Length: 443
Ligand SMILES: [Zn+2]
Image 1 (cartoon, rainbow, N blue to C red):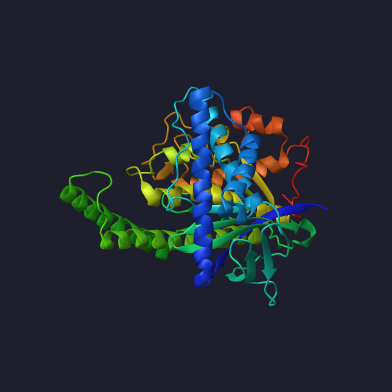
Image 2: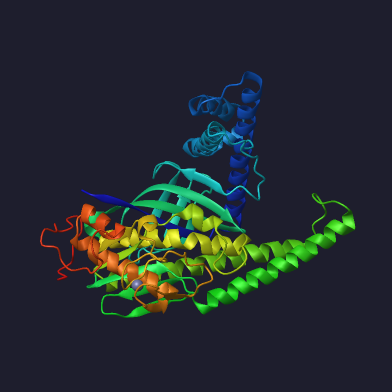
């Protein structure tokens, strides 16, 4: 049976004693991480070779015997921590190979250490679903002693597989991977065609087949909170500069209680914004899949999205950029899996070939002069068509979706290169696009 993986994050509510135990386990994992890292760096520098994950696991067996506290926590979880170093080193060597000069993976302070993980359900941890429809419930951990109440709910029943314990701004979370039966998923699909594109001013612009254009904006409360994040960031910068000036040091200066409070406040606010952002993305992606039977959008080039400056403005930095720039890829990921669950078709257009921002939605011609980021309107020099920049791009994608449902790949390539016409008229020889369930929709 086809099974899918889903991740669900629970918030943990440990009591005072459990909190102490969790903090102690966090400290042990952090020290294990740093010790194993030190060992790797030492061997690399003295013997010019890297130790394997298996060798470090053998070291671990020794360490567990000589340090009772290490021996008392879950061995598999300790291996997961070693695996993280292994992965960090693999990335380090990959970058060396490709000619970069990366620094060694870094030691982690307790503040920067996120937590630990378990490989198998039942080995060191156990999820106990609550009596009410499986929502909330408890988690047990070898390290915590007794069960810890949790809050969270999986949309679908599934079998717990792996678990990551996370410590963030003083709170504890468990991110659990569930194996879900694909047949247990009933997501409703809609009808009709629509294409969506990332807007300059809005989050999305949706062009539907009935001719409607719908801009989807970032919710207002999110924009307000991003402003609050910015203000708090400025306060922190001011306080930090004052502390640096007073002590004459740029690092290791004394951190006042009020600066510490501001850091904690920022971390909490950031967490809140990130959660609300995730809610917004989930609601929007669910709505799209539930409303339409086939969707089109452009392939995302995440690297260029992160690097390019924000449209029409200066480079966005820090938290603000982090939140906004990761959204499109997270959103597309959600649309992909929800579309798969619902049986909605999703086609991703080759952005470089199609150039939805540049191309004219009405005649399909690419203008000789490139549209600039500052051009908020589309005015076609060939056919005279006019539209908002985002509306034009969404309409081009909608047109492309219709074509791609009708033409074969070869024919579509001809349309894009101008050999065939951009009129969308059905081709007698056209072979139906077989990978797509066209959802009882007559084109
Ligand atoms: Zn035109």
